[in-house]
Length: 105
Image (cartoon, rainbow, N blue to C red; front, side, top):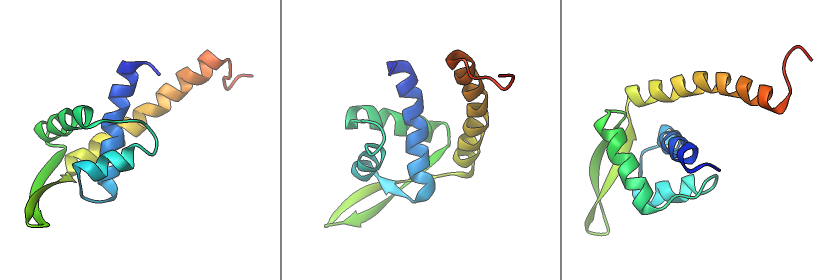
């Protein structure tokens, strides 16, 4: 898969994980890795970018006597995911065209 396409999709994979429940870095990596490979060095810049865009917010919670940073999707993040899914319908039309499958066949 093209690295730029993969990079763009990873962002939405992270959002999809967080739309199910709040989570922390290591767990997000485990959850996203079920469908696409992601490393810490890839995840944390994505989380930072999503937080800067106000699609995510963070909070800390104690775990084993240490603070763990959790990420939570915001309403703006849910809308961002919804817009992506709407746009994806157009991508699938292009995909079908490239494959040679269109509605007129």
